[in-house]
Length: 120
Ligand SMILES: [Mg+2]
Image (cartoon, rainbow, N blue to C red; front, side, top):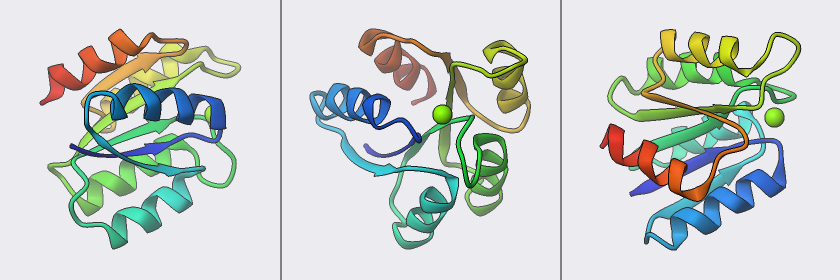
């Protein structure tokens, strides 16, 4: 699958990219929602968007709503370590706004692959 990974943390992007490339997925990385949306407008064949929720510039909740508006059938996985209110609240919100799966940071490569399998 072609997977867009949006996270402001380079280490998290690298971990996700390494895990998914090993399973023969193609990965495109973006540092924030603005960059991610730009990539989605150019690349029409992205199957899955994995997005962090707390990011500078454009955060994940807004990003999820825009992605959903652009493409109702694309799969979205929300990932978060949470902020002041804790990751669960953000992930519940992401779920309500159209994410197909949510993952609480830190997660293992196995958990990431499992969440992708569940939304296929
Ligand atoms: Mg972040």
